[in-house]
Length: 283
Image 1 (cartoon, rainbow, N blue to C red):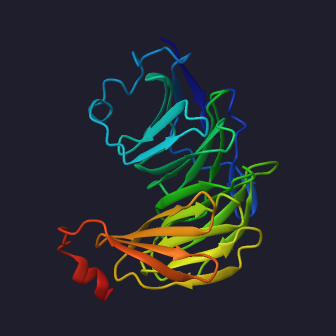
Image 2: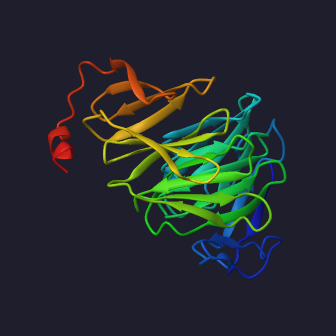
């Protein structure tokens, strides 16, 4: 098995030494938090055999809070507390990426399945080409842990959200710079999802709200109120007409997006009573 090492900006050398980080103002060399990016697996039938992470305790017992299937269903990406992204095909390790300095909270495939975006506690989001095995860009600007990342359905934009209570939208083509910042949240932005038709960007937050924005310009369409606790999860129906949101207290709400009215309300975890929900509600 072969593992290739790609030098990052700030390291001595390497084919990606000219890589840049996207910021609100455009391109600049990122701070070198790591000496290199390690890619393991030269083909879909290679198993992880050797890398500088294979013998680390974290690599042996990884936590994988984030999973993502490629659109064609052939590849599965995993990421978590060991800071490593792994991409599998037919159950075999295809690519292993280490480029983050802290836990990875979220990952997402591009619509064509060739790129993978990540969100991390190291305050960055990154984009990788899993076919060419290249680190493409580091998105910086949040200044706080980044919890969520989402590709637009056309693949031309990536949206990120995090502990700075902001949404940032980045282009994935050309200069790959930040094109929009959306604020107004009273808590951490935990999850972002684009509607399948590409018209709406939905966000949920620690301020107990679910908000809908026009994907084209970032203007708010409406705020959906009703949750009594932090809202962590979102899912659109395939026809883009219904949005499901889930909160810390186990409640799931369905929303009619045509008028913003609530529909079905489900207690998805009826026996779950979080000990700190009262404290959360008081914040």
